[in-house]
Amino acid sequence: MRKTGSLRKGPVASTPVPKKIGLALGSGSARGWSHIGVIRGLQEAGIHIDLVCGTSMGAMVAGAFAAGFIDVMDEWVRGLTWADILGFMDVRLPRSGLIEGDKLTRYFREKISDSNIEDLPMPFAAVTTNLKSGRETWIREGSLMDAIRASMSMPGILTPFNREGGWFVDGGLINPVPVSLCRNMGADIVLAVDLNKDIMGRSFNRSEGREEEPRREASGQYLPNRLASFFNGKLKSRQMSIFKRFAQNQPSKGPTLFEVIATSIYIMQDQITKHRLATDPPDVLILPRLAHIGLLEFNRAEEAIDEGRKAVALTLPILQDVIGAR
Image (cartoon, rainbow, N blue to C red; front, side, top):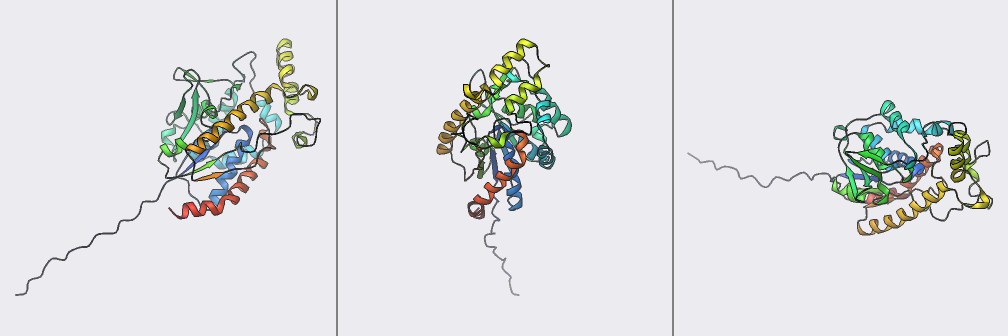
């Protein structure tokens, strides 16, 4: 009787685990709408994002993306007008910021989403800065809108946000493009978006050149003048006098307080971004060209989104090379 020996099995080839792609969206005020264009461009290129994080306006767009509401946000921001923007501003003078921000966050809670971060369909986190300790804080659980509100509290413009007994301001003060957070969340490949690369060097003097001409509305007023007109009658006479002094455009006297605060923060963020990206570079850096869009020009979403798409198209060969090799 012939014996049959047992068959020896060779090593089973293991299926390689796909690497996770993370998207880190940087700060940039109204230029933050460009992140929507970046996300659209990546989707159109067939690039799947596994996790997302953001700083300031980057946190707002990242939160909408993670919650599955990027289509709703896209449609909404394209229709924003000056009246809508001014309607979200709840000025209280004097305070720790010009705008409370409650109207905006309440709108998003009602119209879009305010899920707990841990319940979102995509991993999400936001960067904020602890005003007392000066330390960077990563918010990865709890209310989505609270995280976004804490992350986008630009000093002097939006009041600090109180969370768990602490006061928090814009995450861009410490980590404008949160590559480190993206890696900490488990990303093997990090795609980062820097919105402030070409912001420096803009002219403040509206009487010189035509650089600022596209910012004019049909009424011929710039944003600071529109703000002053909007709040005229809503504020007490003494408050209105103060508000006009730092908000209304006076070409002969140079930049307004809005511009001084914003540009000072951008100078700081530009230097911090350069340092942090040098020490912890992303795998791919996407750089929309947005210097022509101002601090509070949220009504120019169409242009910002288009620039985001263009930036992805320009970076696509690098993206395909990096992601294709995973």
